Image 1 (tube, rainbow, N blue to C red):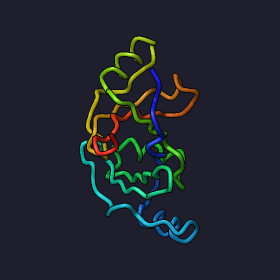
Image 2: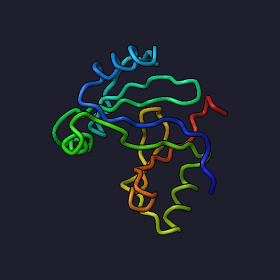
Image 3: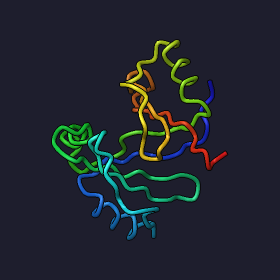
Image 4: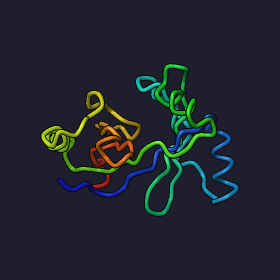
Length: 139
């Protein structure tokens, strides 16, 4: 199994609006689209384009959000995960499970509208890793 391109770096934030202002001021970056809610995952997200990838700003929708728990430990926010593309999500899941890598939860639809799952950070060198099926338009 080989992963594809780095799709995005997930950054947890207590405020997408404040983070967008920071990215505008420091990097001249603008959001790729307006922020939107992913209610099923308990988060609000906004992507910022970079020349070779994206930054996914992630804000909790409520106290039960996994991002809220992350922000309890990191109140200013910070890097939350890396996301790599694969051509076939089910093949990737079968591979990782066969290696004994802990897959967190079911495969579900992510912010790009494609299937995703996460690998436990204790099995990936300390970094929560999202595996995402490559968006069809990228083919």
